[in-house]
Amino acid sequence: MTQAELVVVANRLPVDRVADGSGEQSWRRSPGGLVTALEPVMRRADGAWVGWPGQPGIEVEPFEFEGTHLVPVSLSAEEIELYYEGMSNDTFWPLYHDVIAEPRYRRVWWDAYVKVNRRFAAAAAEVAAPGATVWVQDYQLQLVPRMLREARPDLVIGYFHHIPFPAYGLYSQLPWRRQVLEGLLGADVIGFQRAADAGNFARAVRRALRYPTKASGITVPNDDGTTRNALAKAFPISIDAASYVELARRPEIRARAAEIREELGNPKKILLGVDRLDYTKGIRHRLKAFGELLEDGKISVEEVTLVQVASPSRERVEAYVQLRDEIELRVGRINGDFDTMGHTAIRYLHQAYPREEMVALFLAADVMLVTALRDGMNLVAKEYVAARTDNRGVLVLSEFAGAADELSSAVRINPHDIDGMKDAIMRSIEMPAAEQGRRMRALRRKVLENDVARWSQSFLAALDAAGTANRAIRETA
Image (cartoon, rainbow, N blue to C red; front, side):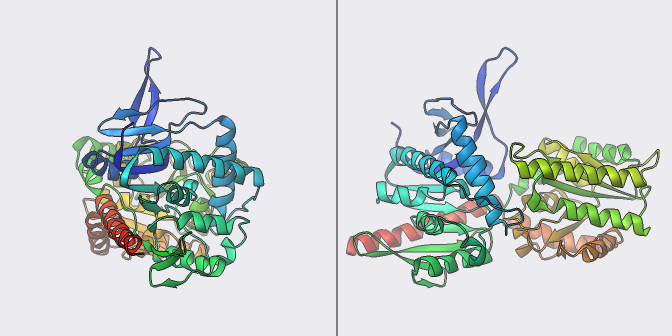
């Protein structure tokens, strides 16, 4: 068995299983910022990645892929239904996103969640070298840090929470609130997207567990009567900004951006929304504001088009089925009321696109609308900024997205305030080039300086320091 000095534990492996024309199965690297961020770190450390291979019921032996040792964790179709679709996405997801949709609390889901987390923890414990660093990713695996701590007290354990963490008044609804907090506190460092999320977590620990907290530190009791320190702090995630800059400079992608404008009838302004089809993204609020601007006569379909990309998401969860029906009905009504033979009010695209096409869309769009009701970060906002090498375009950004903490030069909105959103859209449409340039240059400085590599470096440096400190406490106890 390979023993790794750095182990990443995530719900999914960083690869997808694909079949070629002859039906032969092979593995292909998954797209995504986390995979991009950790690839060079994993190579340097001879790292291992523990995760589900993406298909129910398949048993795959550990294997090497492009310099990383991959450790598949098998999940049955029933476990995916209960642990992933149920507990993770019908309990934790809505609860942690401020109960925009109602969370459901089912004991059978929780039992499956505990069982699956235990399997991930066991796989990580087996592959980790003595004194190794283990980095657990996201809300599907909140119990893994404590389970790892119990199995392997020699490990340095980090956890990063990619979504929001709610205020205690909401979090306290969770029947298993203590178990989850204790699970997370198995880590030496618990990372969050925003300082507010770290603060909510610390308050939950004080209220539910009565553990002392000071600044970013939490004093956690060990089973032997000693204590150790856990750091709960914001480490805002980012993107591989350089790759978006490189794509945006390619002549064929710039030509595709011009082609997109032509295909849309060369409107004066193109507004763009790019989201997973999710109730947290504020797509309904965005469509309402846009529809009212057309009704008010402030804009016309000949001059302004909204392109809405809504990639499919969790299509077996009932709340998402209802959301798709509602959004498509609203798009149909707005287009029915305002379309002309030559122009469409909303070009609605319920599909995912490759990164090259997305960058062309970013370059074609005059205004990017990020209207999330609650979002851990929203990396699309950063992708748009990185792609705008021309220092043009306007980012309209919800104050409830994690990105709003960093991207202060965006036009900020409260997505629940429809009149305020309408004013912001009009201001963005009419914004002079000089102001666009001033804002975009400031945004680009933030995104290019604080890229995903810096995020992973800063987290791992904090984890190394915390692990060293806690090891010293253990040795002197």
